[in-house]
Amino acid sequence: EVQLVESGGGLVQAGGSLRLSCTVSGFTNNEFAIGWFRQAPGKAREGVSCIDLSYDSTYDLESVKGRFTISRDDATNTVYLQMNDRKPEDTTLYSCAAKRTGGCIGYQDGMDYWGKGTLVSVSA
Image (cartoon, rainbow, N blue to C red):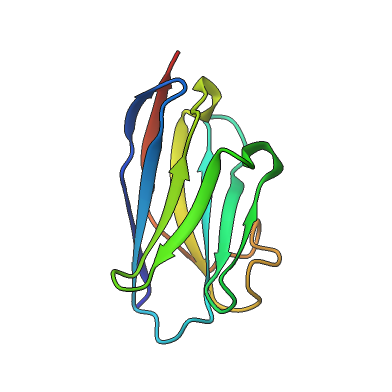
């Protein structure tokens, strides 16, 4: 069974940094893609970053380029989201998800497994 568990959320001041972790289990190969998503109350969920485990390629939402970085640690089966220069509008629930095939293409709408999320709050 594929499982994803997020951690690392919390309160950070605007301009500060935070690193989220997504620990994954139940994978049998590296053909998956892992994505980070966020959803503010009353808004649609949006994918902010994705990493293709097969080719180690990454994709970022235009609005977070230069501030967010997705990376992996295969030794611990963890995918990270480093978030720098946090803004109050980044306050929301962040979740990670896995996609079985196709890499990050279409990851915004095509994830197969989801974690429960971790809450990030940014104070002004």
